[in-house]
Image 1 (cartoon, rainbow, N blue to C red):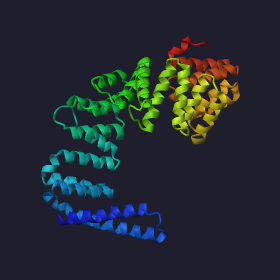
Image 2: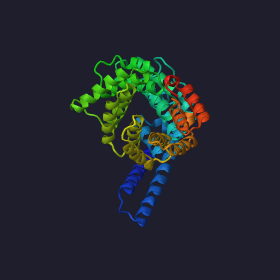
Image 3: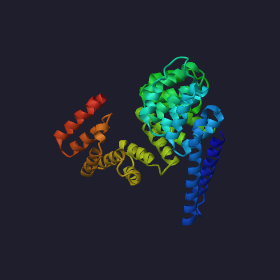
Image 4: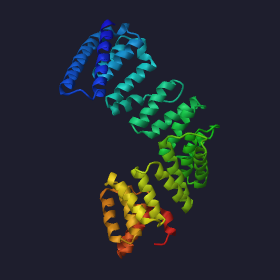
Length: 387
């Protein structure tokens, strides 16, 4: 127990020294070197104490183990962390059957970057009363953020909503996962029981309506949210406001509300005029509506200066050139879009449609037909458009 205490003491000194070195910008070369030597000394002493203390794990209580394993994590000593956990099992410690042990074991795999091990370890979690909320929360976040296994994450948050039907947080997680997986009906059903909707619930509801194709409901939901914001009825962070505006402008666009689209996309741009994605969105809409093309080109130049290999930005600039009648320049830009592999990711056929129209303008009828057929295959609604 004493050795473990000393190990944690030296680790605390190590963390303090690291913090001081990062914060003190006035340290010269020798100052940084002395700090590095002190860190090495503290880490060495801490590790030596903690390695000796493993044998005394049977007498340790939870509070001691929390500090010990935190020290292992601080030092990225995942092997020693694992030895402590194994020792708990070997001595049949009560903590080896606890929620803390399960989460600590999974946290070690996560911290060490062993994602395959983490996936295997979490696979023992099933539904039912046997798994408590803390374990399910950890598993849900790990499946979502670390493993990008959205299907399993949904299973876990489904179970959390079942256990805690009044929890807005779990319902929001489940709704967001539904949005990611394109399951708008499930997302809307998940949010339906929430009576006093927060701004985040209203935003997700609007985005789910859009995904469902119900743009009128999305327009009403998000428009009401923005109206409340401008009347100072609620506060929104800059990032949230940008997200809501983006979704609202898209709803306006889908409903064919040209003037509203342009009005609100300008407001969106003014919130963060240096944002490359915002510049692209504004410039592209101007090109779509064939309005203020010099401004549209200026906005896309700004976006491409920040991210010159962004296929979406290059496609937008190509469409501006097409609108300006500069078809050869447009085709040259689209060649870069193809080189970047964007055509394979062209889910809605928009890039294929642009290529078809640019080739048509240049008199390349065979290529125009090829890309038009490709666009229609990806987006059958284009059949009703004039070729």
